[in-house]
Image (cartoon, rainbow, N blue to C red; front, side):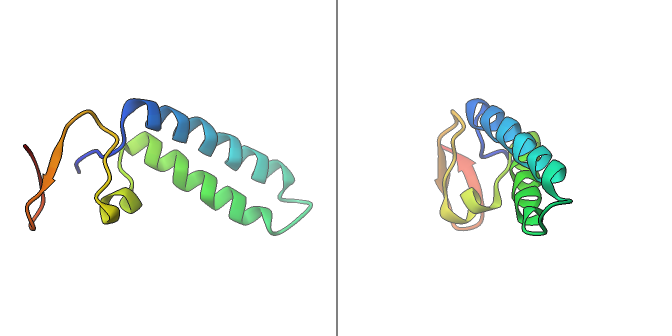
Amino acid sequence: MRQNIGSVDRTIRTLVGLGMSMLGIFRLLKRRRNLALILIGLGLFTGGLLGYCISYDLMGISTTNSKFVETGQDLELS
């Protein structure tokens, strides 16, 4: 799997995702809507760990230092 999230973006996503998930877990007993907070946090955390974001891929965005050019089949280094 190719990476489309740069190192700064990965760090921010990982920390924010972990924080959101933990906040949602600690507050889950009080309100059920905190489940959304947990799921969004886990999505950010997982994206940060893997270095891949499906939303970025669908929009053709990459925050890595590599420059990608869309060829129709896949993304390649230019």
